[in-house]
Length: 548
Image (tube, rainbow, N blue to C red; front, side, top):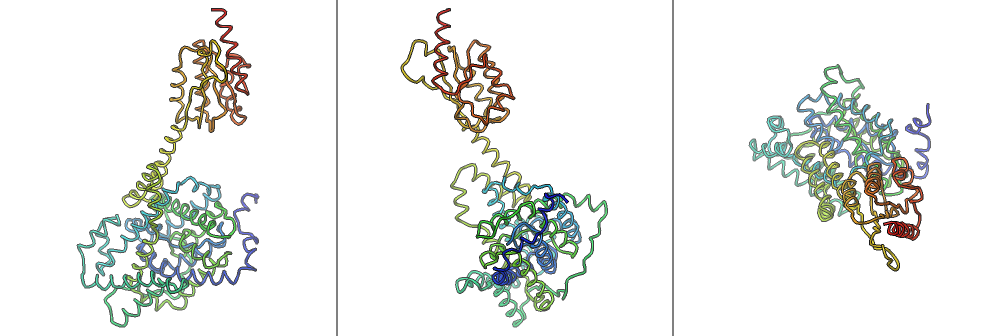
């Protein structure tokens, strides 16, 4: 086994801190488990599967990702972003397809980790991430609306696959009496979630709200749809039914799920590393752990898993510092399945909708939105485009277009930063100085600006010598270097002697390889200091004047 592959597997050092932190880890794990319970139930139902599927995912995937993942504090399970992707898959291919998609996506993510692609998430700009988050929040909120306006959730299948459009269309089936009860349940949950932290930050507002709504609805026989019976144990593991036709149909959806799982998990792990002294995280190993987590979840009929930013943040803030905390969170949820499955089945779906609606609102930070919108037009455009495309079309397409959008403006900015300026000769002027042009190159010199720079330099007329100052050049790519070689050749063909000054050591190899230095008339036309280059240019002009 290669050393590189061993680096992707669990080691004893993963638990080096546990001897000192185990008490805090256990407390944090229980805290996160309580917070995760309503989210696991809600995301399971909202995805078109069942509350059981959400719990199974949180238990199985949570343990596997904690053991094999690359973060000491990452908490994994079902998330709102994944629900957004799964809803159309369930609508088109049926609930049974989710286990197959989870298995395939897990294999894809595992392969990405083995291929060391974990650093790729660093190329996603901040405005794109925030636009993506805003779009997901809008979709999660809109997905809850149909179940609040009518108890006939099957009616949602008659509406658009777009969550916002479906939310509007659902009002054609409005049951006013039911909606009053459902909105009342949402209001109670929202009040508890917003008010409980003001009393004490350790109070799980979402769980309190669900308990209150469930108790009241049972006491007064409220006509609210409920989760229904849950099994009192985990299902037996089994491979999903797979054939070639199924693989062909689900490969593309699985690739989308895999991309989302990788992006969300790596972002969550990166955020967790910045929240406290939680130790470093390995992005490649994180992908391996998340891939195995989704594979494990599929064997038990669960959903694809990702790192959950909100639950991971709760873990860190509650004192979690080792993997024991995330494992404990999953064991707490397993205890719910084994001990209190009956009472959990009596929870009204409207209460879970309230939890998800408040969660969606909390995903969006007004200060962040204002900061991005007021930053630069390019970043604001990338943010808005990503959010709109996420809501209107597809999450992964939104990220791709958002990155392309940001990349376009970044390249345009890089192009504008490239400049070539003509400078005056230093010191006392001498006869013939008007025949010498000093050109200073600033900023990056790449394919984005090569044509413009070539045109500006090639337009120089009525000079005998051109001194090119290269000491201020930053990034130079092959296209930029090739352009410089063509400029030198063009000027020399016109009888203009070119002197190059101040080539940086990091650019020298590229200039030599591409042929910039070979294009000079003589190897002595390469200078380190500007005064020496000016002296040579003046000498050349004098010789040229003497022979004229």
